[in-house]
Every structure is written in C-alpha cells, then in structure tokens.
Image (cartoon, rainbow, N blue to C red; front, side, top):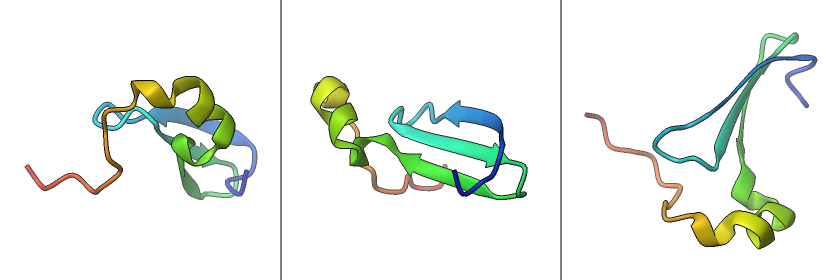
Length: 57
C-alpha cells in the first residue's frame, strides 16, 4: 500500500466497507472495498450504505 508497511487497519462502524490503513510512511490510506469487483461480487449484496460523507452529529 501507499502507506508503506502496515501498522494499523480498521473498518468504519458507520460504513463497514470503508477500510483505513496507517503505515510506516506516516500516511493514512482509506479504501472503499466496494471499489474492488471481487469484493462486490462476494459481499456487495450486504451493503446498505451509500458512500456519501456522514453529516456532522
């Protein structure tokens, strides 16, 4: 990944198909896993979320 060696990975509670990766290059990479055709084929039917930014609470 562009983040370098991966130190931390977490999924979003509000949008479970978003994955955040932090790494050795000091960068944070956010990946929309539904942009991967294989993920969509296997898990896309479980997605009920649109990937629009959530409003501030």
